[in-house]
Image 1: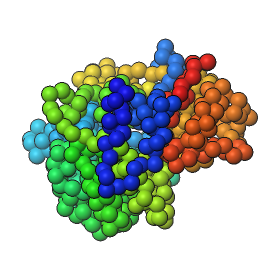
Image 2 (image 1 turned 120 degrees about the vertical axis):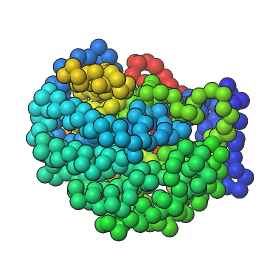
Image 3 (image 1 turned 60 degrees about the vertical axis):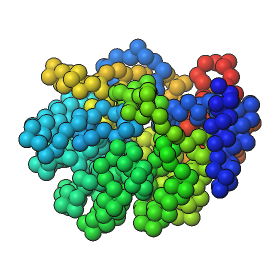
Image 4 (image 1 turned 180 degrees about the horizontal axis):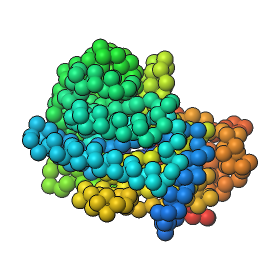
Length: 479
């Protein structure tokens, strides 16, 4: 195992500098962090509950309480239909030919079910009806497959039954289906933010991902969105793809600067099994790239961190990373929905409606069913399609709040923390305090007065820090 770890770390492109974190990860005392990044688990927005025997009624009571206290909430609707499955996808999806005659009935049913689930939420958590929605996101799947009539019906329902008085509306689509006509429809319906996956500005890599669009399609979608009047356009890029070189990522960054994109998400490819995690949308099955038998060459850790440093270098002057992986131009605001759920002065409730959605508040969280037949059966029986729920102990609430704040890459303020937790300091939380001691010794954070700040290595390794250094077992030490 040790040789495999070091071999991966030593997989470097000689034309680029050795990454800053190389010496740190190569040190024997940092083996736990090296093992974590080598195993490729996902991701720093996973903050699971520690009370597994938790009732659904208790979860609803927690949500009702927290929603009443919150200034805003994040609300999103998941539309799971796709016209194909990407090779890295593990999410619950319904593959459909949008041009086929039966597809109309499928889309109608998906919208019916989303509305039915939202109605059940309103019945079980009445405070939702009045809660001020900070941002409403339509995610997928590929929501841009929805026919106009169904999209209009979905949005009309949410506007009628939720408080959109201060809400911004964000829509996630797929380049080949976000036509100019569809973008005009979204603008008419009140959407001001557009997001879609590019993955790479290299047609060979796009094809290798199983995607059915081209670089040219992506560029045309961006141009069309601007013509229609969108000035907030976010694209998703992935680094660490099989066959991807450091040069490929350099070209991606140059293209981002050429296009002057307002927001860019740069995610490391993750192939850990999402179904074992409690992610934003829970995983259902292995991706094609996880299945055995096929030979693929993935860049090693050394090249992955060379790629990450290139991204930081190209974005340093014009962009700010907040939270980790999410870059926004200095002249435009950060991702609102991410701030609502991670910034220490917010961390408001999140309600996710749809197949595999994840909802949470400060006291508990719940994951929706990911199997579509079981999801449909639950709705037919008149019950919310929640698969499991967990609670947070008082100690875990503080730990999760601190970890979420750390993921924003901003200094974590004990003054703000004390305001959140009735005067309690994170320096007095035994789990956080042990972690701070270790992280300071490893030079991954600095502590100045009331503020904890990630160092450059800490920023790069924040996912690993969050998921290895805050063990809840009293007396347990993690190197």
